[in-house]
Image (spheres, rainbow, N blue to C red):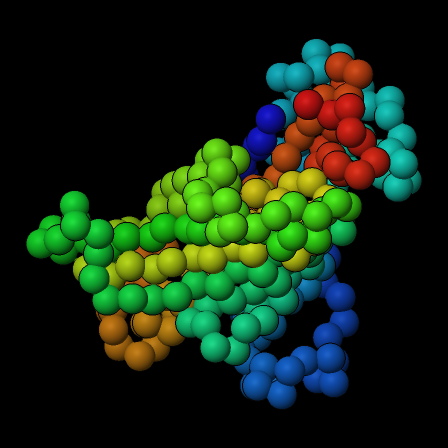
Length: 252
């Protein structure tokens, strides 16, 4: 079960973000002049507030009690530590590396002129996503889907989920007839890759749209809101916040 939480930035800064000290020596030289709002993104965060989990747990566990101590020392209602590094790929219009526990996903947003055939002449833009996983992102090697000649069902499902989540917070009319591709590549998987991709994908998308605004391509940002995602699983009937594949295989 997945719980998707949308928060305003002001709420996120006050309740969900736990900043870590930033030194210029730890930043790429090209990032040292970044504005404060952008540097604030590169902090350790709680991707979703405990309130979001409480709502999910209430639906899954009527007692609302958390009895499980995790193998990594976390309580059942405690999320994994997460961090986001913006501008991870200097060649992309927008990019970010998101780390949630041991799960790591690189997200990049690319702008292209034109839209799919069904949108031509409508004046609307399009936001879509592609998802992939490195062969050794998991404990055993998974062959690349390109060698199989087709995209697997799981990958197709995740791509659609990411794309729909990002389009839900984007005004396609303000984008114009342009397409933004958000590529999410998992370099290390330990559960929650699709939800990490949604969160990191939004950061990459927001950076790409800000560039378009700064360059005068659009008058105002098409972003309607902020979005983040997390996951909740069941272990022996108990709601568990952000399960780990390698240590909580019984979760559903």
